[in-house]
Amino acid sequence: AQSVTQLDSQVPVFEEAPVELRCNYSSSVSVYLFWYVQYPNQGLQLLLKYLSGSTLVKGINGFEAEFNKSQTSFHLRKPSVHISDTAEYFCAVSETRGYSTLTFGKGTMLLVSP
Amino acid sequence: DTGVSQDPRHKITKRGQNVTFRCDPISEHNRLYWYRQTLGQGPEFLTYFQNEAQLEKSRLLSDRFSAERPKGSFSTLEIQRTEQGDSAMYLCASSVQEYGYTFGSGTRLTVV
Image 1 (cartoon, rainbow over the protein chains, first blue to last red):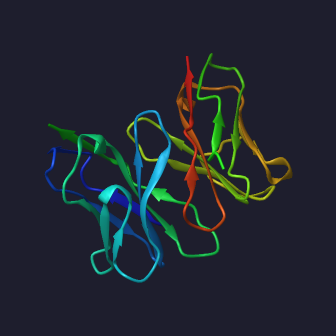
Image 2: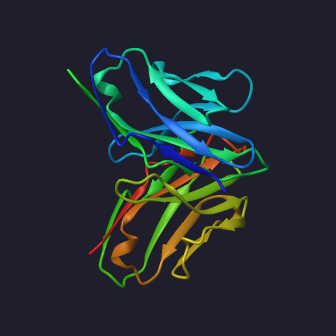
């Protein structure tokens, strides 16, 4: 079984500042890793995913994440945030077997202010 | 391709009533998932279909919950004898591979 810990429930940041949202996972087997974003009253949109290969993954809207196997982390970063980035961000993990369901963290609310 | 469609978007029901939600996946996606998201939490897995076969059910899916996917197309999730604890956002997702889900906008259920 896997688990995901998002270390911050809320991250306030000013517009154009850099941001890092932290995610740690636990699993006894190989995993795929994902970041999703959720705007109010909407479903989840995939930001980026790590399947294999380069540990630095680039996604949509200028976000990137780095997979660190030794630290079992997959932190999300953006060098300069916009007001429109205000949303809930979820880290998720799934096993690399034939099919596997996603296990989500509790989410981090990114609050961008002017 | 209009994405994953869920209906209704919102449902308010009285405790004890039955409710049914519908999910229309992306047409070429053979895998379909239901998740539940309560306030302040991440989504939690409920059940998984590959084509019309229901291959996995979570312990969260009590006997009051049933899901179907006739002919491997749309899916329905029914909750019988609703309880206040069933109030949540019910999310449907579909995929063709074991990763890269596309989520719908969800059905928000409020049990009063």
